[in-house]
Length: 292
Image (cartoon, rainbow, N blue to C red; front, side, top):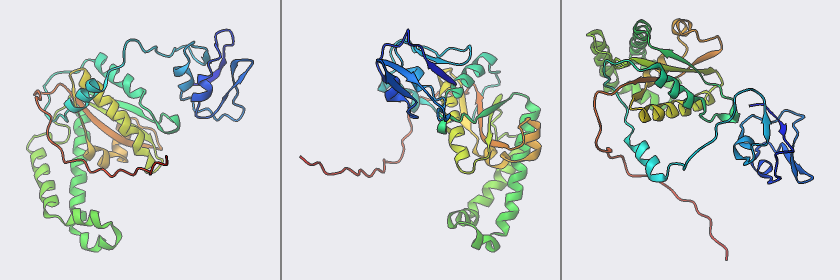
């Protein structure tokens, strides 16, 4: 969002844009807000547009900011939404309408991102052949990792203790063999026969690259849940396919970008009636002493 300035004929001088702007690009003059950004520090976050009660902030483009109508959902409604959302691994053989996918993507578009960089771009995979190609690549990666596990003693000085313990755990190798065997018998234990995959790709910025896609996928999953759809974060696919040249090329992902999220989507086979238990909270409170 490229901010152009403030309409003085509309501005009521409330100063909310001055208070809200994280880049401090607004000032007050003659009881009106004034915008100036000679060094281009504005990130285009749009907080000034969102907070202005008069819609006085001017910005570039034909698209207009949405007006939030009605009351916002309360804590109980949001809690019910979040706690009722389940990871779905059993899908109906039923297509997801384009209209629903567009709605989910429109919510993902508005997910927050660091410095408002908005790095996420998406590929919607509905072609069963492409989905199988991706799943096949995941299984091949499992087989390659199986060879690495057998060399774990040699690799011990070069990997973290936690990763070495994972490789040294007999369950890891047997799990790989079990998943591979199931897949080869015709069971889709990678994407669970989901009719749709949403792939998120971003530029490579090191460890920070994964934060924004994780938030965007979370937004998408919650939006899907609100439409009666199920979803699952496919960690295996993200890890094994992120820089797979064959897959990147097939998905038309440009050079310099990589896969940072894969989400399955479809109608769930089952309904869920209870919220499963979780481990007790582990919280440490650090409260400064109050001086009266």
